[in-house]
Length: 464
Image (cartoon, rainbow, N blue to C red; front, side, top):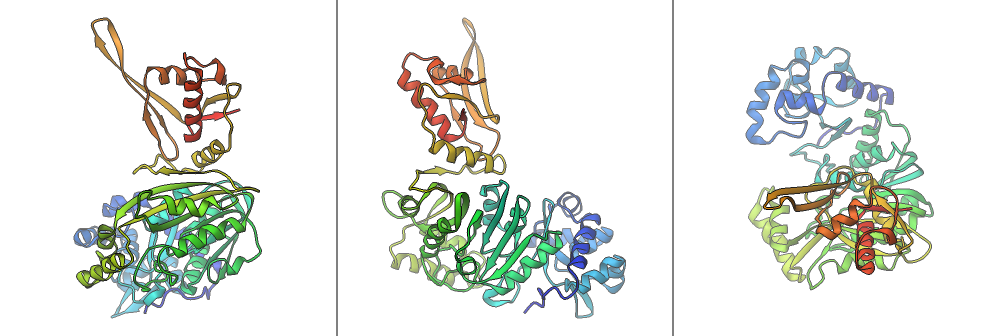
């Protein structure tokens, strides 16, 4: 079992000093990409020999990369070359002796300007494994609401990256996790990044925050529909989609009026309407909700994906796929549920998330939620959102240049885009400044109104 993470036995100032020193030494995505050809993510096995060759010639940054990214031992002389950082790394438990060399006790990866320590590949910590920042973590960060609030909640904090992000717009963050190892990592990572406004509490789901309310909340629960209970971060003892339903419903109870939450979920998506289950969770709650659908995956390919790295891949796949067949699961759905608390039952909808998002989606998601609750009438004043773009393509013809195609797109958030016909283009061109719907061009007033309503609901147009 890995010795890391210990309780922070030294001072938090020492841990923070390590974070500052790592950044000063170039342990950042751009510098690591220059050195290793990777922006800081773990180097895959096929590229490791070449990355190690570059790291061995890379001075102090190469030593750090070998310790925390490449699982390579470094000599006492190489470690001492880091100066005072070497002693601080030892004090923080990040470096230990093994087989006569110094090795990193954790994986450390920079994500933009945030450093995250976690258990690395092959860590033998049983079900208490704390992974690094993976695809779902990145997705949650992109789909979380970012606005100033007094109190925020990170439910199931894991390595703590969501709590650290929440801390930038919140006066106080509460981060919870059932796994005490995760709490230790998250506390360490907060100190590593100089973040002091996070309170850590160990406990199951909403028990640590019973009776409390928050203006913002996020959750990346162990939502995977799995026949195993191997990993606390992935497999829920509740089984199936129960954990997703419980977190979505419970989240509405911990939000203050007008508060927002984003929850990653998974469910049995078999049947005529693959999104009926998450919509059903939201429909009975006092929230406006958007189900941001990311994947509807056949059960077989879902089992293949989750067992691809298993030591006995064939046996693991058989276990997973047999579980799906036995429970009648033909497809598995994945989504993020975004909610805004309100006094009464609100509106809800399903939106497919494009494969590539334009940017962190908070502003766009707020427009989507606003659009659901906005009544658009002929007297409404509307205008294009600042990030809306119109692209027109013209081609030469017998009578000169003529419009060949037109597209409306968003430069922010989910990066929506759609084709426009001539009538739609005329309407959109008239929305550069604030305009009453009744004054927009078009022979059919109802058609124009319906078109504008759709633009408002998708975040291309705002009212007022």
